[in-house]
Length: 400
Ligand code: CTP
Ligand code: MG
Image (cartoon, rainbow, N blue to C red):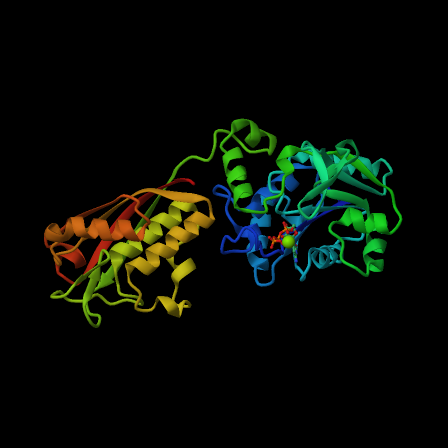
């Protein structure tokens, strides 16, 4: 039996921020770039670098989601992963991560999940600098713009940009230095290097990388999405080529006749028909479409997002389910190519309202094309003897 040595390097991935400036409706770490979240991309980079203990610092109540992402990124090194809950500030989140490091770790890297596309080579340079004797090391990029000192709306001085650099992460430190600096810190610093410098240590600069930019606002997310369609950028961050391909998913649903009120099917109300029973309105067509879309995007199934533990969907109609599904796909970086759905039922007769159903479903899906077809089953089975309806959907999703 081979014994895997305990790593001497620990990487704290801070992902507990709310992403106020990105304003994507979810904590920033869980916002999708392509089919993968910001956190997942960041962790893919971490696990492409030399083996290290990896502590993910997650927003409160999202620890389970963070663990799933970390385990997916870890491959066969799941033993290296742990998740802790973050704090109110980035500094508090880093402190929570520090507390979870194993005793054997003597080099600590602190990395922003928001720098999702940081290539493994940056981790290697930072680790090499600290292992080579530096108390701390920060990846930096030269400043390219001409810089001015301003007071209000007046330029008061030129600033020599040769003296300046912009700092990135991962920032690496000797563990004893970082522990002591955190223990002594009484104010909030903008990054770990500032905190360590304030404690009196010299911090080395190593070469950063343009792909290590921080996703802060919507334009940064657009930039990350665009870069991931470029084979060169994908290769640098350790992803296979070509870019994420379209994906298909299937979904089916069955509901029995026998509910209360009017029949709702394919997003339409059918006033003179027998209603279907179900937790919501029993719209098997809409539910099959939701399942197909979620499956295509790899986001679980209808029970994951709309189960009976979501009382707000009791009695809801197709548009509520479909609108929310489009939002879930968007968060994960997908848009809908098209949807095709077939209903098997004796009643209602779709021929007169088929186009209307397609328009209603398409509108609820943000305009994506939807084809509806309907058939009877020659008197066979539960649909043939009029006990209920079934629906089969196929959906195509493409990277947003
Ligand atoms: N971070 C954290 N805990 C906090 C605040 C920030 O772990 N209390 C993390 C973020 O998740 C991010 C990194 O620190 O990976 C850099 O912070 P920033 O880019 O500012 O992210 P947010 O604070 O989430 O964004 P915003 O400031 O727009 O709300
Ligand atoms: Mg912030």
